[in-house]
Length: 112
Image (cartoon, rainbow, N blue to C red; front, side, top):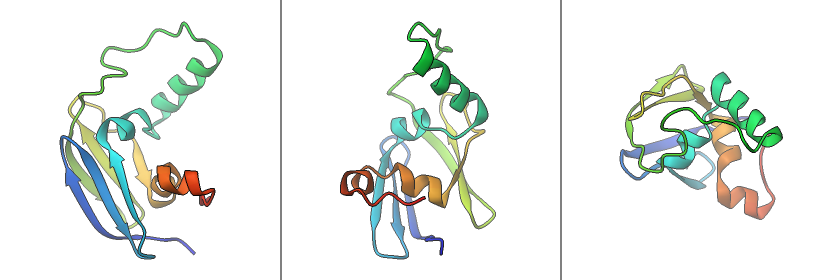
């Protein structure tokens, strides 16, 4: 059974807040979401950084001052976030967003 959002609130310069159907509320800082982008190029960069600490980062990578310019629903299963640095290729599925929630990770109840 997949848990879906009941309410989504974007504060472009601060955070994305999602109230889930099960009553849990997740708050994600915009810079954290940018760094956690599920896009292919960002996944590749994170993997490369794990194996090579001297990886050359693209311009703007690691910038904590990024904002979310807009969000859009992708079907009924995900969000696309348009960031101020031009990045917008990551599709944040509901399960992926739940897995990023720091309070769920701390409780040890991370969903698959």
